[in-house]
Image 1 (cartoon, rainbow, N blue to C red):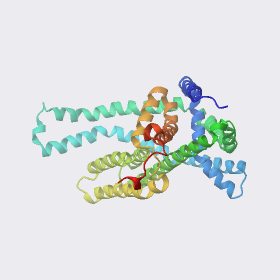
Image 2 (tube, one colour):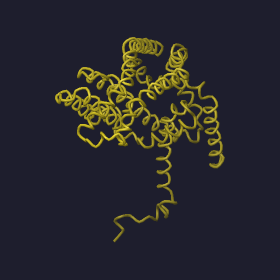
Image 3 (cartoon, one colour):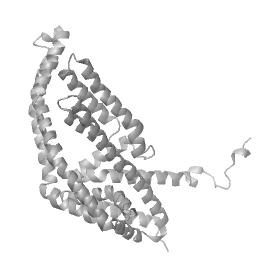
Length: 361
């Protein structure tokens, strides 16, 4: 005989509370395992496809690990040093950019030459502020990232965790499925498929979009001659995780830098503008519909709320679990709404007594 719903809700509530408490208490310890699990989840479809091509699970995992290792080495040797160099150069160039902006505005708005002008004083302070705070911010971000994801984590823990989770992924899924309460196995499996569809459509799809968009902006802006094209492209690609925000931030930053670098050369400025117009068109009409889809059901506002809430409560580990938890809560909310709309509480009458449309005069 099944347990009453009140007792089931109590037990599942306690399990959820214990899970969140463990994440809160062991956040930094769990980070490499969460990262490794995310990598394994992201690469599981690739391993499944290699298995369908005839490779064993172990061979498929080994091939994926080798390819990922080569990609990481390429990034470390070729891309990351240039990215850091351009970021430092951009921070150091902030005072010159602010002074150029001040000169540009004072030439067209003579009132700004007044020494007591609030706008002039503000513009004069912007460059020094960005330079001082920007360097501190960049150093703080790097130091924080390295304290959480240390060299040991990158070299040993995350790859090992990802390798073994990817190797045993199907076995773990089968094991979890065998532990589902038999009274609810059909419903839980359906909800799990819906959650996986949301995660697969959003996380895998959106990360792929971010990589493609970031690479496109970085390469094209560098070919266009923009001094900090790699940094702008990386920022635009990273923030593209939130629809339209990446294009807006990257576009404003790139066009602003292009105006200072190419002032008077309207053709070069137009090329930079065209790059972002084309990139936004490809992202909105080709990449996102094909790789993410329009029926994911994970609204950007809901995603921002989840990232902010879990990040504030649980730190970096909370941000890692924010998207899966948000996807699960979204699916459960839609399931609950469906159950409510099919209940007598919503319908108000027994289904047999509900009048049909053709019976209404």
